[in-house]
Image (cartoon, rainbow, N blue to C red; front, side):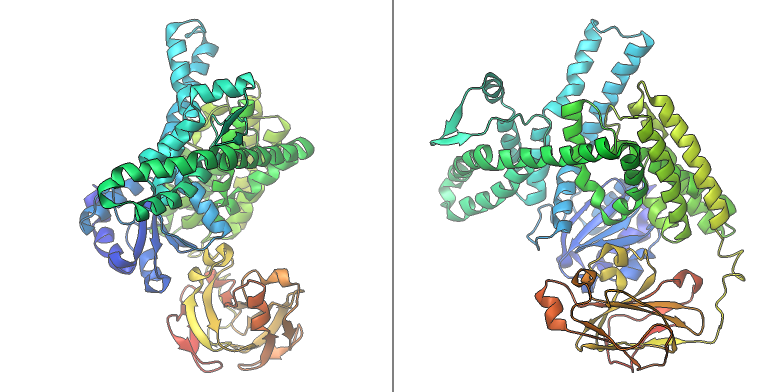
Length: 613
């Protein structure tokens, strides 16, 4: 089945991502294939997105993520077979160095947590079975089976540092066995007993901070990350004939004091304060915090920020025995997404789009996986994002008001994951879901207009062929390659970006200036055919608050190709740490199905065509 379904995909994908030599890391998560590439310019992004079996693709830094769905493992296996790779040790299982950034941190956390999710799912579901057995009277608390299942499920969380140590070592390119040992050191019975007894410990005269590390992940991730560099140094200086002895000995002698005296406490503080901050918001804002968190879940998924909450979730379970915000919001958001895909799919006329939307609904509602629906349906029909966020906010607010909590990590945010929320307030969750579904269905019915059936009402004002010229000289890249998730995910629309060689932006087309940002870094133009163009100079340059920019037009001005629009100080922007990429996006590109963006060229300002309608 996998061979038939992913035959074409697996035969072409390696070449489309630039060949084996361009791949630093190749792995997969629950729904996506993940390629960390050496050179993004070698990736044929549009061709990748259109491969049979791909539901979309996005960039996260230098990582190409191809959305597949529930059968991503089949796609991964098919690629490994076609490319002659070992699925257990494929290209780049170790992580190469890269730029330090928020994205890199989130990617690091995700890489250390994703491989151990089956452990957490299995342990969580056993806890749920025990709880259901108690509630139904089928399993008494003093029964031997109850005892065994309880300690078996607890083992998944108690020994979490060991599992994380293994995954982190694979992620950072260290020895997995040493990574597991680093995790085991943090939870050794002697160490735990000494901490509980208040015994003062030290090593080489350095005091060891007394903290409990069971069910925590930050201390181990930090320790294994540093250990990966120590181990490489040990390998470098070890004589070949003594390497098997010197490498582990030197690595551990260096790492034990660093881990117990510095990194462990640092990770513990980081995890504790992150959890405390989120719970503080919950205590201060109550239902509103849960509502906002649930409404923002789609944006967290798109940007990958949702991985950053994983340590907090573990910490909450360890400290409180439940989690009242993130997991509650995730299941409400996920089920709402499935409902919206279902409603939209029933309204669609195109057979392929209908099939995609309905399959995404099943994936989200039963499998609890939202990415196919998010990238395959919601982002392509951006009005649905309003429905999703509105329904999610209402459901999250009601659940927050009712103090709904997750009592286990069920691993699925579909209907089968509802068992993780069974408790005194489960009726509030049911109420929240029913009302949020009603909101989502109503808004989807009103807002969603099928492109095929509503084409006349969405037709451009003028069908005369038009084109966009380069607004500045420089190399043209796809907007998907821009290092900003909002642009690269095409949430605002499709387009291109130009890496400029000048400092004055001119109008790429005829039209009227419809918007000038207060911070002067962005200008909107409405074209004669109704297309709405956004020109955005720099990445995250809104933070400069207008410094380094000079607008040369005003709102309402009529412009033609070559009219000067904006002058910027490239040196000033770079000095403050921001990229100068000039992004050009057609924000209503869904209204122009035949629009074509031309990339991979060196453009000359006012002369080179970069977009055709």
